[in-house]
Length: 230
Image (cartoon, rainbow, N blue to C red; front, top):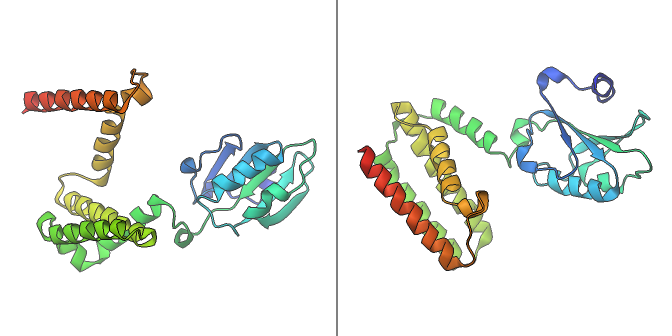
């Protein structure tokens, strides 16, 4: 590994992520760290890796490939990695970190920007849950309008505005010391896990009606538990 770090000129203190190219999950990528992708044994895996990485990185993002232990490297854009000849040895791919302003598909970037805005924007600092309500209503109506008009580009923007409202409310709550965005995510993740036993626990369902009945039973139990804790 030290040799790979030397060959690719990686500074480990900046963060280094090493993952297998087999079944690569783009949602687990840290775009701000150096990335090494190993076990790229053929063009099919290379193509899968390319498509997964292009979900997060620009198509033209510069990368470096090396075949096995040859130490022969080639510089090319991300979208060309599955065109690089792979013979008997496996390909190793190095992906440099993305600058912050280019990590536009990362929620971590959103959090970074919003933390800075929360600290430096007087208007944001003065908002409350109540003062933000008209904006939430307005953005919700614009989502309805975008869907009614079958305008997907506008829908992307309006759903982003809805997400922004969630972040605004979380920021205000954190400023007041009541809850945080992490608390919202925790509540959501627990609910997702709890309400989908047919996905995560093998609970038997065969029809949509079965799922609806299961949901109603889970929600009823949740309400009973909430009533008991009050």
